[in-house]
Length: 248
Ligand SMILES: C[S@@+](CC[C@H](N)C(=O)[O-])C[C@H]1O[C@@H](n2cnc3c(N)ncnc32)[C@H](O)[C@@H]1O
Image (cartoon, rainbow, N blue to C red; front, side, top):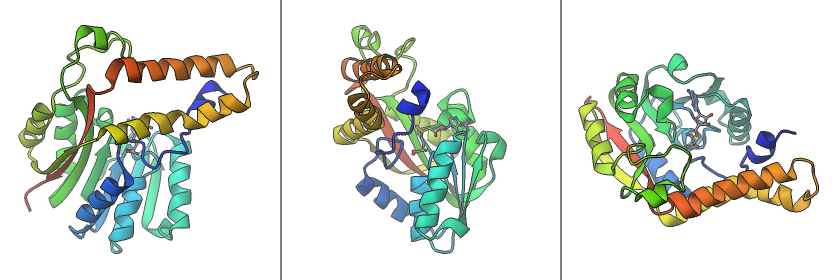
């Protein structure tokens, strides 16, 4: 087992984004209410939001793309367990090269799959949304621009320019041809869950295997990640969820 395999799976997380189930269920209901025939989730991970939309839109067919075969296998198993297996296709590969149009398009926590910045990603996603359709776009941003001493505690190379303010992201969506139907951002409890649940499997493994040859490397990885969160980005880093419409 590699350190990546120990730290990676995050089976405690429901979504691989800082999003509560309550919020996700409401978003899924709003997207399903548009009565989509097709729903596509790009960089879907295990496709939890996609599956929740499909469950509420019985006529819809789903399509999810991700680079991670492990996460896609989890999505396929969840789909089968919920009786959705015959309405969803999960494809392993780069999102952009496997993109097709849909009535509802989801891109959550992975705009990088579509461009070198958020503006380019929104421009690339716009033609994928059928007339009258929706884009659900989840994207990180600065709540307020962090001071240098906090930037220095974040991921190596993070600068004030690494992310944008929410108002500017919303403007980019409008400039790309969308109208913002709903703008919402993750709360502190959603972030706390995201950070804690992402590492809980590995923390429990470490408790069970303190003398394993990989234990020191796993401990270093977890301690570094926790420091980046608590000393670095906590309260500065935001995640916004934009429900965007296009003209019919
Ligand atoms: C933070 S996770 C978000 C997953 C999912 N959208 C969710 O909210 O649960 C980012 C995902 O993007 C995927 N990813 C990154 N680059 C990609 C690309 N070029 N094409 C497809 N998937 C990609 C990763 O494998 C990972 O599953």
